[in-house]
Image (cartoon, rainbow, N blue to C red; front, side, top):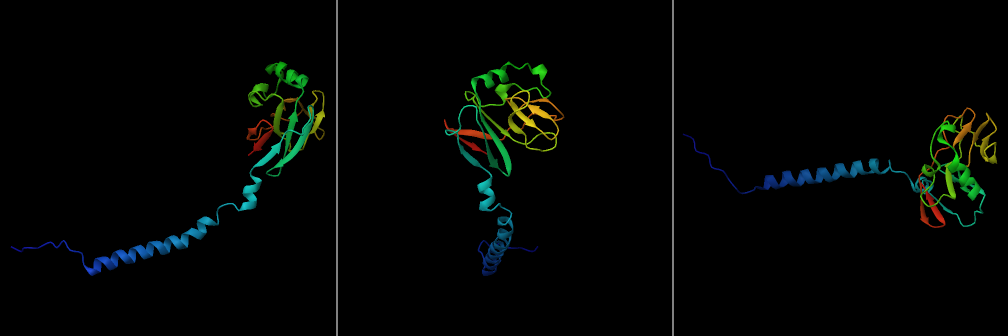
Length: 175
């Protein structure tokens, strides 16, 4: 019968295996890091990803256009009459039914923020135009109401809502 003895002591060879593996792992990580890092957006792209807008200079009834990610954003400071007209519109009259309350932030009915691109072919509609005093796309005749909802014309959908939040009572962050 052969008798084997186990040895609990580590040898110099074990240490060299562990050290070589550790140096190899650090080397691989050092080579991979630049490839992963270059896939991150640079500072100029990150700066365009959000836009802060001060609402205090926008007069009631005025529509201001700002840029966000290369798109026009319409910020409308709606009058009480415009808010009432938008809220009183029956959903059955709309091509893309959506209540006005779903298009504004709670308690901030006076502020409507929409992406200013017609949902038909991507034109930029004109503000305070058309039969509904909202936006009108002169290219193909789409008319939107004071809530940015499509009322007539070939556009199939309401004006899109960008992601935005109120940072203070008079400032919003888009994006």
